[in-house]
Amino acid sequence: MQAMGLCAIGDIARALNRAPENLYYHVARLIDVGLLREVGKRSTPGRPEVLYDMPAGKLRVLYDPEDPANVEAVTDVARSMLRVAEKDFRTGFLPGLAVASGPGRNLWAARTKGWVRPEDLAEVNRLLNRLADLLIDGNSSEGGSLIALTWILAPVTRRDAIQQDS
Image (cartoon, rainbow, N blue to C red; front, top):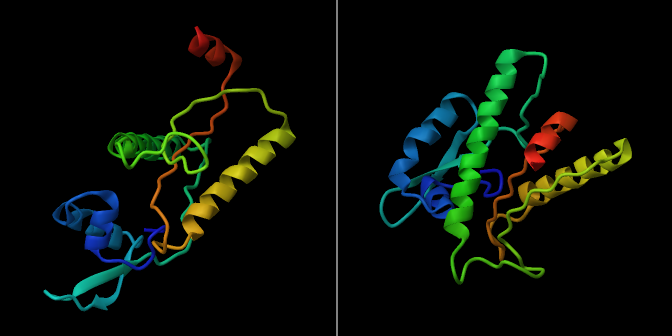
């Protein structure tokens, strides 16, 4: 929704390659918790479509490592994001749609791990924020392609690093 701006359920369904009837429940729940709002109607050949928008600009997840309930909730959100990312990857991995190399690349899965100094970590965070801003603030559909970018940035202890590398 952040990437698309003002839109109807049919627009969301086309962007997500989903059936509109599968989205009404989810849109209703997002309205219930204040993450979406109805902002008007659009005339169509059939009946008018309800238009939706987000009440706030950029949404951010609040992280509190000291609060076990928050840790569980945010971990559930991350798990859900990764499931959706896998589905996006699978459905985007198609001849004629996927571009796997070059400057127009739109399909990429990778995992990398490395040591960073505090100033390097600050740069990593600056670049991730810039990527998020590019996607969120992009022009909805004027000559562009809708893409999804999902990442996990997590500290790894030395013990975890040894177990994961073996």
